[in-house]
Length: 114
Length: 116
Image (cartoon, rainbow over all chains, first blue to last red; front, side, top):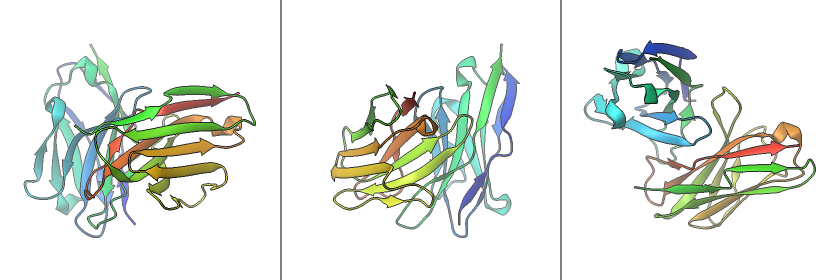
């Protein structure tokens, strides 16, 4: 069964600082990997996704993530955080077969200090 | 881009009544839709997978008679919480997968259900 671990419940950074949110997955085959962001009381917005090819994926809002098969990781990064980035971030893994049903990590809450 | 609309965004109902939540794909056809429940400070828990024209597939531990799902058209799925109780209060989110595309699903904005 597929699973996702986001080891950090909360991350606090200062505005302008760099950010890295960790995500480790467990899946037997090549996974589909996603990062979503959720603002309070809102649904999920897709930041970026990895299916195949280049392991460094660029997303919206200046985010990027790197797929490292050897480490079973898909960490999300941003070089300079803005106050508006404060939100809940979810990593998800989907099966590479035809069914695709994503499994979500528990989320990491990003707090941005001015 | 693909838009999924969920309605209502917030609903308060009395204990014992039923509440219906709608999930619509606005600009694409969705053979499959997913219903999630999210507890405070928790991840999304998949409740069921809804397929157009057929019965929904419920995850283990989810009461089928409690959470009725209907997916009668390619653009609309509904979740009805029957005989709601305070413990059903939660944030419910739907997502929809475009017909023929299996690699991504688009999410609605969620519905905050409060049962008093």
